[in-house]
View 1 (tube, helix red, strand yellow):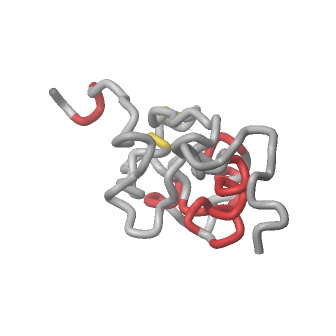
View 2: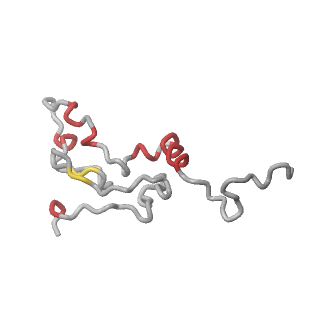
View 3: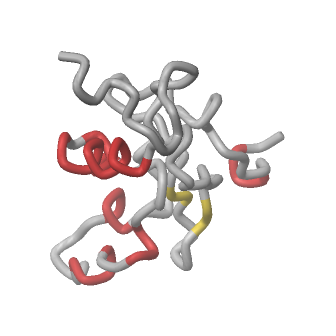
Length: 115
């Protein structure tokens, strides 16, 4: 199947992006991993290849208006390098439920007064 005609499928494995060394896990965050998409310029966003022959970045000239590469059409919701920052990883961690079971009571602090 040719590159231009391939089906765009999610790249995650169990809600992680193992091909990115610092990528966070989206598991148990409530955020659904998304497949790459083709934007209005014909550029595939979120495929982790970062170069496209159709991209204005690959065809830059003095006449290219930088605004052409601004906006949501250039950002993938779950496969974006911005998720690899400490601040955004913290946002994901805050969305996870505590994993203290089976030793945590759901409504009572059983350790209160034990120390």
